[in-house]
Length: 214
Image 1: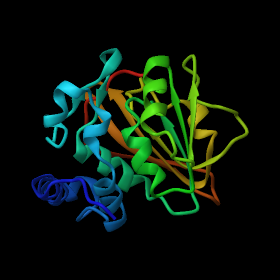
Image 2: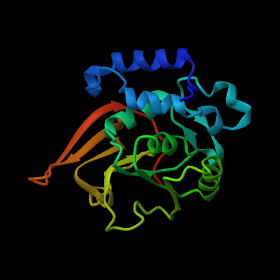
Image 3: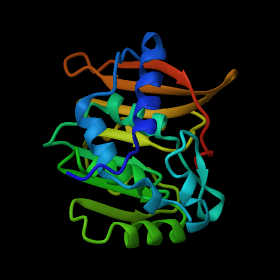
Image 4: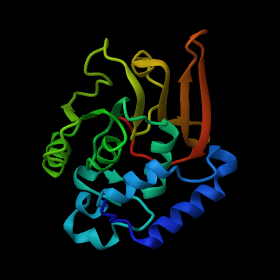
């Protein structure tokens, strides 16, 4: 498999995971996530005039005043979602399509929702031929169908609180990875639901910075 990621970017990711292990519980970047990350050319998901910055470990501006997250956050959220090859994943916030591309290499099927039609259309053009990604343009809904359940849900925009609609779509033992606004600032959470007791466990991970959920 072709590796697009330059060695300096991979080393930066390894350093980030090592330095944040006490917060994230992840001592290193899982090999499956690293392989998926290296297989997707980040430069193809940013505007032409900033493609030389594509592998810098920072967020970058894209169309419609939105951003593509830094590689560390993309790989961290993906790793926290613990995606298996038979999983179905929901992504809230298609953006450039970059996160969806990485998810699609790990999961059986990816459903991605976007409120900005231009972003969704551009992402679909970039990912033409990727057969396991399903695109939807929404009016702010967090669901395609309330009866559809997912093994993992990743939200790439900051919510004021955890939407009940997303919790309702988690399969037993499913994982929801979401940035939430708190009094101190935005915090990334990993949320799970116990299969037996149906209790919700919310684990704060690290402070983050995302565009707000519309």
